[in-house]
Amino acid sequence: MKIENKRQWVGELFFLLGTILYITYYFFYIAYYWYVEKDPTRQIPVQRLFYIGLICFVVKIILTKYQWKEVIIGAAGAVLMYLCWKSSGGIDYPANYLIILAMKDVDLKKVMKAVFACGFVGLSYGFTWFFVNAPDKLTTVKDYGRGMIEVRYKFCTWHANTIHLMIMVLIVSFLYAYYKKMKWWAFAIMFYFNYEFYQLSKSRTAFYCGSAAIIAYFISRKIYEFKISLILLEIGNLVGIFLSIYYGLYSQLTDPTFMRLDQLITGRLTVARNCFLGAGIPLFGSNIGGKVCGYGIYTQANDGYVTELGIVRTLLEYGPIVFGLFCAFMLIAVWVLYKKGYFGAMVLLEIGFIACGVEAYFPAAYNLKAFVFGLAFYQLMGLFKGKEKEEKRGKAVNASE
Image (cartoon, rainbow, N blue to C red; front, side):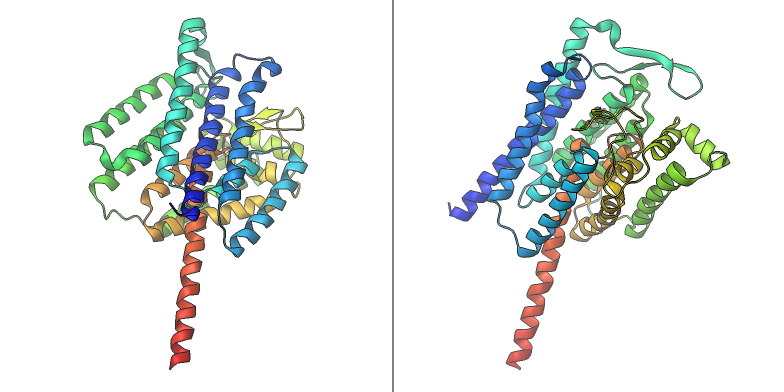
């Protein structure tokens, strides 16, 4: 094995190890430690998995050979992430950024297999512990903002939406890794499972997004030339971003449309408005939550509201620069994946964008956007590299003539 190939192989191993530790941390922390172990000192051992995972991503970056333009972009982004961390204390996006940089020459299918395996183990542990030790605490009975008292199963997490989102992550990661080999009945079983879990959790966002992913992957398996309109998809993304920001931050509270949308998504617009009024929009963001907020880890404590609209949360926690770059790259990533024929990765990205755009978990790589962004970024760099080769070839031909 050549030295360069060996470096790439070792680097990919470190990346997969980092992914295993990172996802294991999130699933164990959400499914057990966050809810059961209230003593911060008891949470330290599992939190170390997160930081060791980040170290693995850094090692992967060190072992990877980059182009100069990738180095320049990476360094500029690292400075920006540092400024955001100093301003808000949040390290979700800095962690995402490490994942994006480290994704070069990494097989996304292997990553999703690791995500599914670790998530399955973490949830299995959480479910088992609660069924054995706290079977009376598997449900919550209250008004969730829909105008009626509901019984919703939260199982081993603090909220029913959380557990179904975690199930959705397992569904989409499994689908991406195996959908081309799955039979029709496997899709049917998965769809039925998602529906039955919805009857327990009553989480509409996770159910709709999980169902959409199952249908999309099934169609792409049966119709290999399945195409969707790129323009309509990008317009849909822009509309989602605009509606979240406008109605979450600037619309009049007495606007009938605001009131209807706020009721539809159970008061999330009101919570986002309270965050905006309390924190404003600093250039590099602010800590709008507490020490732990939406699965993010913070080094600065500050009591306050926690917005659940993930797109709005990005603007408030990381500032307008990061928000603008995110929105731009979201559109670019969809275009690149479409152009290169990565339909499965497009579905993965869109599902993470939609589901966590409504919920609070948007910044965390737990929703898998960072891994797909990494794939899209280096595919984009490859397109530029291809153009450079064509230009050099053209100059050589002109010189010979």
